[in-house]
Amino acid sequence: MLHWFLRYYFLRRANSLESDLVNYSRIQDRLGNRIKRNQFQNNEDDRLSIYEDIEASVALLRKTGKNLITRKSIIALAKSSGTTSTSKYLPITKDFLNANFEAGKDLLAMYTKAYPDTKIFSGQNFSLTGSYTIENKIVIGDISALFTFFLKPWYRPFRAPDMHTATIGDWDQKLDLMIPILANADIRWIAGAPSWMKVVLDALECYKGMTIMEIWPNLEVFFYGGMDIAPFQNYFDEKFSNKVRYWQTYNASEGFFGIQYDKNSSSLFLLPNVNVQHFFLPHIDNPTIDQIRTADQLEIGEKYELVISNTAGLNKYRMGDLILVESQNPMRFQVVGRTKSYINTFGEELMVHNTETAIFNLQSKIEFQITDYSVAPVVDTSGSGYHRWFIEFAKPPNDIRLFEKLLDAELSNVNSDYKAKRDKSLVMQCLSVKSLPKSSFENYLAMNNRKTVQAKIPKLWKDTEIQDQLLKLS
Image 1 (cartoon, rainbow, N blue to C red):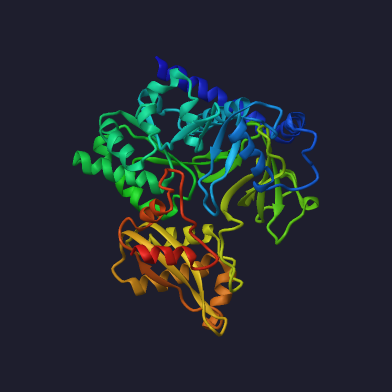
Image 2: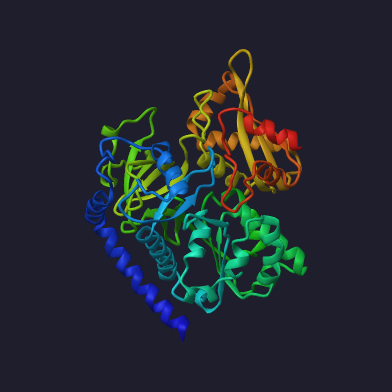
C-alpha cells in the first residue's frame, strides 16, 4: 500500500516540477528578492565572491558561535571535499537544508515519471555517507552526513545501514561494520560517487562470495554524482549484469543544483526552487561582475562557470564548476570540468569531460576497466611536451602501448584544440600511461587525511605535484 501511495505522490510531484521549469525565470527572480532580505547590509551585491570572502566569518562562527554571515540562524557547516584546495566550510540554515531535502524528492519524482512501474519504494536504499562533529551546537560534516543527521525519523527505516554506522568517521571501520548490514538488506537503489561505490560493491561480493545482483536482486537504479560515471561504465555494467539504471545528480556542499531530466539522456536541468539563485560567467580569464548572465542569456554549445547566491549567506559565489549548455527551454547542461582543474599548458584546453568521453568511447573498442586516474602535463626544455597519465586499472588492457595510441586518438576526436596541438607532434607528443598499483589513489587520500566518501583527486592538474606524491606511494 505504501509503495502505491509513494509512487502516486512522486508522479504528481513531477508534474508540479515541470510547471516550475516553465516558470523558471519568475521563480528565480522571486527567490533573488528573498535572498537579499536574508543578507546583512554590508554584503555587497556588485561583486563576485569566493570562499575566502567568508572564511574569517566562518572561523568566528566556529570559535564563538557569532553569526556575521546571514540573518538566518546557521545550524550546520558543510565541509567540502577539497578537490582543488583545502577543505571549505559552507554555512547551512534550516530553510536551506529543507530545500535540499525537497530537491531529493524532485530527484525521485523525475525518476518515477520516467519509470512509473518502479519498485524502489518497496525496499531500502543505500547512500554513501560521510561523518560529522558538533562544535558550539553547530553540526559540521560533509553534506551527505548532514542530510543523514537531520533526516526525519520516519525516513530512516528506508535506509541502510543505520545512522550511527553510516556516519562513522574512520572509513575502514565503517566499511567493516556496514558490509554485514548491507549484505542482508533489500536494497532497491544506491547513491554516491562511482569511485567510492565501487569499493563498497567489491567488499560486499568478497564478504558474501556472491555477485551484487545475487546479494541485491531487486536493485534498480544507481543515482550518481560528484564525478562522471563514464570511466566506470564497463565496471558497473558488468557488476549489475546490465540490469541497473543510472541517473545523474548535481549536488554539492553549496546546494543541490540539478538532476537528470529524463531517461533518454544524462543531461541535467537546474532546479528552480531550492533556495539557490543561478548566475553564469563566460569561461574566460578573470571574468568580472558586469559579465554575469542569467539562464535565458546563455548560448547553446558554450561553456560557463556557475555562480550562485543562496539563502544560507553565499552571494554571487563562484562555484568553480564549468557547465556546457546543451539546449534551452528548459535549459539542459552537462558539468564538464572545473576552473582550476583543466590542462591548457600547450593551448589544448583539455577538460574532464573530454577525458571521460574519450575513455568511455575507447571502452567499446578494447577491454579495460579504470579505478581512477590523474593527468598532468610534462614540458621539456624546448617548450613542447606531452600529457602523462597515471591510471589505476581494475582490469588493465592487454597492450599498454596500443592503449596509449588509441586513447590519444580518442582525445583528438573529442577535442579539436587537442587535435591541433597533436598535429605532426610539433607541439605535443603522444600521451604516456603509467599503471599504478591497486589502492594507490585511496592511499593518497589517506596520506592527506582525506579518506572520506566525498573526497576525490583532481583528474586534471596544471603540474606534476599530485603525480609526484603518487609516485612516492608506488
